[in-house]
Amino acid sequence: MKWGSERALARTKPAAVPPWTVILAAEEGRSLLPLTRALHGEELPKQFAYILEAETSLQATVTRALRWSPPERIVVLVAEEHEDRARSQLEGYGPLQVTVQPRQRGTGPGFLLAVEHVLAVDPDAYVVVTPSDHYVQDDLPLVEAVVDSVEVARSENAVVLIGAPAERVEPDYGWIVCERRAGAASMAVTRFVERPSAYDAESLLYAGALRNTSIMAGAARSFWELCSVHLPDHCTDLQAFRKATRASLQRPLMASLYARMAYADLGRDVLENATDLRVVSLGPCGWSDWGTLQRVLASLRNEDVTRLLDRLRGGGSARARMH
Image (tube, rainbow, N blue to C red):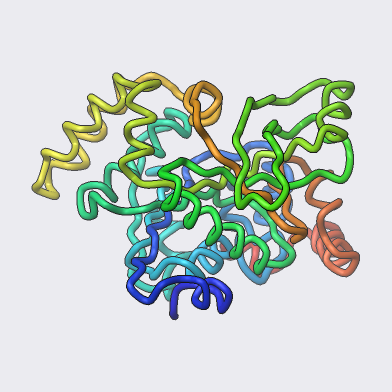
């Protein structure tokens, strides 16, 4: 499959090198465990669940990523306990690279582990970072926003976030406050607001703040340098991993590093304290992070809701139970 949408290919110079993509799929996603238990007969992180039957959100994320990155430039970060399930679901998607996190230490260490992997093989890489548990009705606007964010990252030497416009007050989301300029390809980020009160969320809505999708782009070196300022101990520890060139040493070393590593959140501990971030606005595409069952039902088309409810009443489909 060729990387890039038609618009992306039309706007990209022939000599341009496609970005890498890091897909973060190691989080537990416990908010939907009652739903995944009802569908599968076991508690699964939502990224591995067949909520709409056709594909899991992890598979849908990989399908989108193949629009801008070739499979050999896609790194999927998974938790060790779900490695076999992830590899099974990713069969047939090409030579993806699965990086295994030995234990939960938050999105900060997991992100750094994946970026370190990219830097080890391509020091000049640009990277798109995306969670694996989002729902998107129409992929094209998101693909275009990703392509735009990579272009801005390259032209402005910046880390670029993707923000989704809000249509209603949604306190459960993180919000990005930005400086709007007519006709600008991107906007400067002034601050983050995580889970505001309903009153503050209403003010953010009317001020034109964007919901934080946690999708971003930038040079791999820029990401590493940003984290080295705010997570210096994590970066120091993970640099030792790069020196373990023999495959037989990598997993034992990583387990040892993670055993003493502190928990860190990429958004709260790094991005919220960073300066000079940019943001690109996402066009209408039905994006949702599926953080709650209510959000799942609100984002689906009527026929999808009906089919999901029918499956729940029937105890889940045979296919879901098999996975």
